Image (cartoon, rainbow, N blue to C red; front, side, top):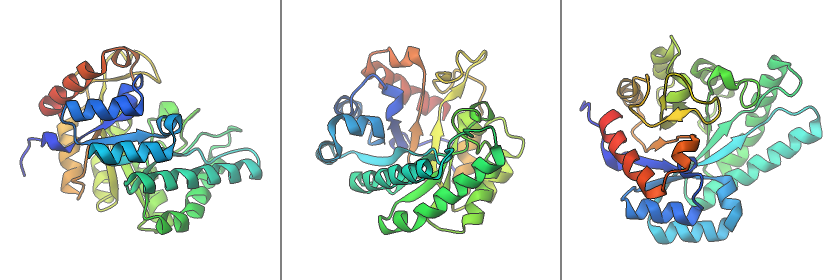
Length: 273
C-alpha cells in the first residue's frame, strides 16, 4: 500500500470556510479543483434545500456527508421527539443532496446523568434506523474528544462508538473517525480495526500545542502533534477508501480569504495526510 495520499480524495468540510456561504464554498471548490464537499445544515437553511441541491448538482461536486444530526438527549420526552423529527429532516436533506452519510454529534447530558443520556442516544439512533434505511442514508456516530462531553457529546471514544454500533446491529449505522477527537486514545488502532467495514468517514485537522481554544482550537494539518498519516493508513487497512474531509474550526483560518484557505488546505493535505 502506498503511503502517499491521493489529493483527489480531499473534501472541504464546509465549517473550514465558515465565513463563506454555500454558494461561495461551492464556487471555491470548483476554482481550486476540490472535488467533494461536506455540507453543514445551517448553510443549507440559508438558501433552502431545493436551491442547495440545484447549486451542488450544477457544480458537479460530490457530497461526502451532511453535518450534522444527533443531539438526542433532552430532559423531556417531547423534546426528545422533537430531536428525532429534526434528525429525520437531516436524513431527508442528506438524501436530497446525494450523500449517503449523515454525521451524528450525539449530544450532551442535560441533567449531568451521563448513563441516562447515553441510553437516550442509543434509543434515538435506534428510532431513526428504519427512516434512514428508507432514504438510503447511513448514520455515522462521531465520537468527540472528552473535553466536549459537557456540551456536545457523551460518546467520547471510538470504543464507545463501536460498542454502540454493535449493540444497534444495523448496517445503516457506522462510525466517523476524526483525528482531532481520537488521536490521543491508547486503544485507537485496535478500535479502528474493530470498526472494520463500518467506517463511514475520515476527518483531518491537527492539534496545536498549546491548544488555542476549546471550540475553535483545530489547526491546519502539519501544525500540531497528530500522527495523521498513520491514522489514515489504519483506516485504509480497515476498508475505508472514501473522501477525506478537512474539518477545521479555527477563527484565524475562518478570517483568511477563502481561496487562500483552500490552497493552504490542499498543500497541507498532500504533505501531512
